[in-house]
Length: 583
Image (tube, rainbow, N blue to C red; front, side, top):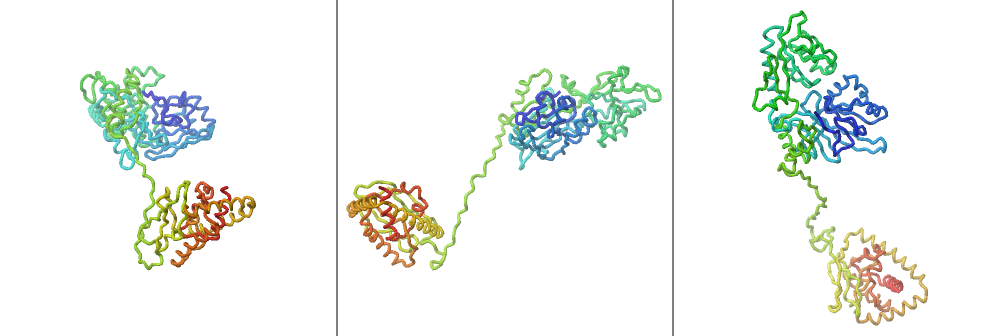
């Protein structure tokens, strides 16, 4: 008897096998099979009223369950809201909140449960992980390993939670004979009885409305005789079963039931009557499929046991045994296990306690860890060595890493020295390498600065520097004469100090002319430009322009660094304006 409340912790907006109380607010419903203990509230007036105004709520089940459900007129109002899903076919379902319009997508796969016709397990995958609802199930040992959709990439899926049929999860039901073994026992007993005369009949005392079709079909094929039942409506759309059952009483194997409103027939061993159609009394034996009765036995018994002069019990189970459930759990190894059934005499806490050792934390199997692929890295490009006379040669040596230069950190010097005209900075694109040298007494702290050797970047730097020079020229004209005079006085004072000491010249880091192709003239011009710049400005400023002052114009200063000497006239005007603005 199912005690599942209908809601799963991971996906609380859907309801499974329960349709009353809080489940009335679900966005979707799922029915594992058509036994009454899994259909509570399914035909309730509140749910029926909800379906009249809802456009998105559906009931999902197997095709067989749909036929069985709609064969009963009481559930006819579900016809437009029921969706049959094919087994072992993942289906995406959108859970829509009809009030807010919010939508959540899940993927549902129906797996065969082996409990009764149409019974399925629901494998649900979504943002909250993968969960498995077994409903009522009977799986033999090793059968889970053959289910394709429990696996992904050659291994069992990472199942977060299992909502488990625990009907017989108790040591006294450690091993239950398979249905094949039960069938063989019933078949031999029936053969020994019905072969005595046409008036010897067998009554299968089946409690459930359906679920024993496995016995019906196999016994019908074995004895070439249909099984008598009360009603064929539930089987009318299941031809595989319909051909094995009949409403004709003139047969030797019966599975009919006592009518509830006719107490007269309850005195008879056979519900449809104790006599044959010709009035001859029937010789009847009854066989009652059962499991709990066998579980209460203190010693081992046969599959079929005689309990009276003409009555028998056969060990036949719709549910997995204790050992079968353990085999199933040890294979899928879920993180959490929640019982769907609380056996008689047990509490929910007791059942959870005996299930705990089967959880992943205790079963000894390590957790499934999905490692990220990691960050993508750009492939290292290696260029083949080329001839020194090649026109495409860009570097002096084989090292393709751009040369890293150093720029001074912001620092104030007391006695700067003027740089020697013979010391300058030459492009690393030239064959001749000349280093910028400083006096050891005034060495500065440096920060690495990577420069680009790309031709396109140099062209962009030239354009930006020309635009910035024009901008500086406009600003210089707008400066008042008083400020200009003050600037000249400051420059005169600075020239005296810079005659003997000075940091690396600011103009040594910029250029305004295109790169010269002649190496000798390039070095000569670079030396002359320093002298001319110092003469035109009347000496260097006593304060080195700091990097922080140009932080807002990195595109025109810092990023415009070049390995060539700047133009004397352009640098003279620009330097004067920088000195003026610093005041």
